[in-house]
Image (cartoon, rainbow, N blue to C red; front, top):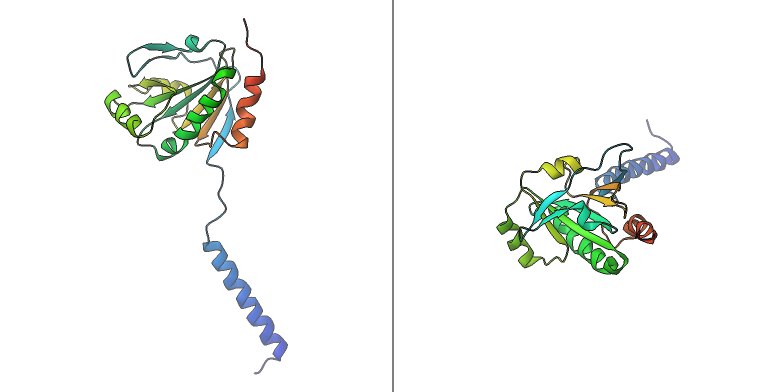
Length: 185
């Protein structure tokens, strides 16, 4: 049975559409955000922060009193952590005079390994050591990187899960309103 020419054209067009749709499904999808922002849970107490830096000096949250703190949890083996380090460092440098402090808390790695990492990737942020992983367990869901944003009053406001370009408009929307709030004292 022969179909009229219009039917054959429509059939070929349908076949081309189906093949095109199948090919499009195989193409990479547009990049999605590699991070999620979660508000700090209401009523959740602020965990203790008492960690040593690479030189052995003890740091607590009180050491950052009156500053906005970007508390980043990371590890050298974490590719997204390494990818966001330069923009995190630039954020700290750009807003240091406005009262922003960046502290990078390393998850369970020896100081010698971290120092070696920073020979290749210089960072001006305060580097804190979490040798047993307790701080990460208290502050984050242990997704790396995770970054806790802490207001000048010492209260966490949000957690960023995953890597964020800290020079992006999304990062500015998170950090700049916190910096605009006046310092106390």
